[in-house]
Length: 583
Image (cartoon, rainbow, N blue to C red):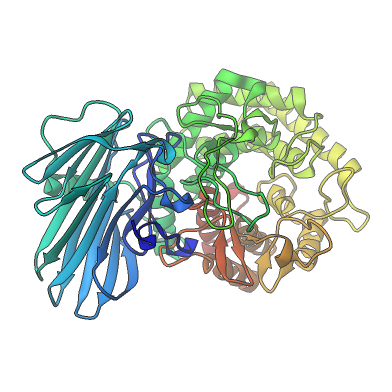
């Protein structure tokens, strides 16, 4: 095994293949460096991203330079390598729509202008690199094997060599021809007949064509369509959308901030639902309402911040004993599932209000509304972990978002329910203003914390305050002065170090600034912030959570769903004039 087989790459070079039930990261050597099966939260089969030896690669022989692009309105990725003789392409996708038990990886390799030699390597390692393939069999160019509890079948054609736990192939592809590879991975018995590649490609193309809606009424409409494709790719049939496809990618080298994001955060799902409503993506909106509503009806005031896509609780954190991504560790599971986050209830109400405005409400949703209102009524005075999942405190953002959610849902109801929700919103706002307004007139992080926070830009955007409220203008001015550097936005000040030394710029906050400036009527600066933040994506147009503004590198898990969501919302808002109904 050569070092090149499992080399890690900078995050901006990875593309995503996803089908809603799981996702694969593909590096510039055509290396599938991360794939969990059969579901997002299950063990990895390929894990070279975090130092494992499991990988599936398709790479030109000899020297090349890498590029690639997504086919429009889809997660069909084309790796494109310029070699010394011509151009080689690998068209990659996960078969779509998905089967919950079986992932199908499609690869179609072709060349332009000249023949090319291509090297293929398949080394599955299940259970986070712990289990090698066994019971390997071959007939007529099709390989079958077991890897722990998983069944694998690989259609590769002639010429494959099997040695130890690796399958290798070097083949020549001629111009105007292609070679198909189909890899199936399942936790149940595979169908008797291997699937036909042409049929799989046709079905996948048609499904993506039907998935992403028209995005003409937005800024950067092509990027918006791509972000919607990413969000659909992260959303399971049950409605749950994972926060990211990966685990353990470091937010900052050797700082210990490494987390598993392969779970459904209620807040992130609500962000996505509201963005979907803004651009008319009813499928994404319905998915968010279904998942969040089901969890509220089941758990009420004990709603967890995050769940598995199946709706089950999160597993605790544990180590895998893998090297980790360079600068990171190897953590799976997440402690956030045991926290109380008040803003999740407010965001849920904002989601439900958006659904009602879009004509998507039903009786079950209104039951969830009642559960969320009851939870806020009972718990809004309790300390909570807040949007950044820190120590329990009376976080200003959490309370203001709860107030915004109550106000939004009151506008969609009548009678006593509307009156009571609006009265509670006013009570929370008044109490928070009494305890958490700085002498300078801007919101501070908490009653006992006078610092600023990027999350404090969000409540005004969500309608917690009336348009033109001086506290909104004061907060935006103070934030721009204290927590932005050279067009990059940061969450909060960790210590006395310069902001870029303590943490990467937070892309969510950059898009919040763009929307806040738009609401304030400063269209030129709003668009400048939008474009600056949008440019932080890598060539595959995926956003991570943070961006290192000094090294110009992405940091944290990818793709970060809530960044794609707020980009979509910002693109929709900045395209049109202010309208109070959009809150």
